Image (cartoon, rainbow, N blue to C red; front, side):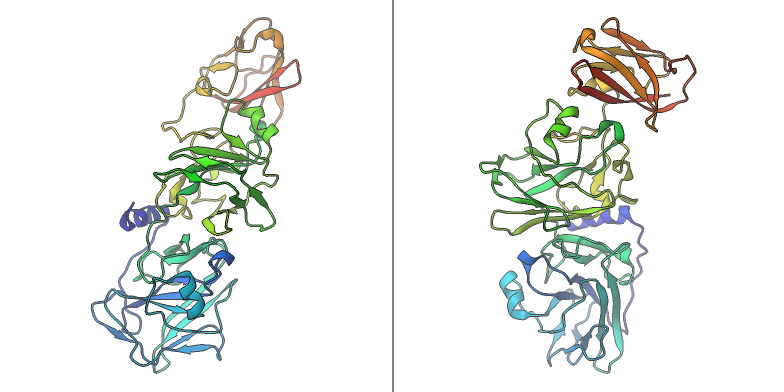
Length: 439
């Protein structure tokens, strides 16, 4: 996907008013900010300037400042930005060049750095008149991913309001200094996240990796981390992902296989889970170099059906940045671990092969047929129906493989339309659960 298509995704995810403007008579913008890099990309802080006009801009003698009256960098004589040109200003030019050896013409150093918790960036002309002032933050509504999780802060429209957090997004690991934003095109990336299961289908937290490249990737000894550096899972030796292959990493193997008994390949235990209030997901290679960085959220415009309503976050944009809500969908009920998402979603539970019984029609209006022949009714202790609050509304003990529920309570009272859960309990103490929809 090219830059134009990726920005279209971004613009669909949030409404941005576009209006060309000059700043103090100059068509110049700050287009990228690296204020808290990951330790494996420790280039120190830097910003990127961009001349979006048709004339060159001489910034000799201009000032780059933060909120402090004493911290400043003065641009040297002869500093000119040509039309369409990007120019990087680095806190430490030597450290920057170690991480980005191909980026030339880097200006600096400005020794004071940028605030990790947010701050003020000011660009003043040679007369001390403010040209640009950006007060960025590391919390919502500003993108959170640039706050130490790998991506940089990238602007959507350089001609629009630079203080509008909706005009910025978390880009790719390491960013794109000295040039326009480029799609991430991660080889190994997270394609599905289950961070808050619905109560009656609690498979624990899990994520799915996919190899989006055209070649096999050996991910032996790669690390998975969330926002906490102390939470780390090391992928076992000999783990190779073929092109388009999926791999599920689960918090608790026993809990996962209770609901997805036939799924593979699956590895774990991660031990740690992922927050239901938003969290980071980071992938490091065997040399501890960050390869992938994401911070997801649990509230709109991110798909909030994944937040305890039985759905997962499923990736739909495999080329751009994963740090925008438009790159994800809530997918299908219970997700699609170990496989690519299949749209449109299955219309009945019969299509979910992980269950040893079938239920249909689902959704239903007057009756529901529960076919236990895959288990054998003699192995079933009882079938319980729960409402959305977790209250048992009906219990049934099968006398044959075909069990019919009329959609009422145990005493015959009619139940309203809505979401229910069927739990089939076996005589050995195990059970299966499936969501029902009564129309």
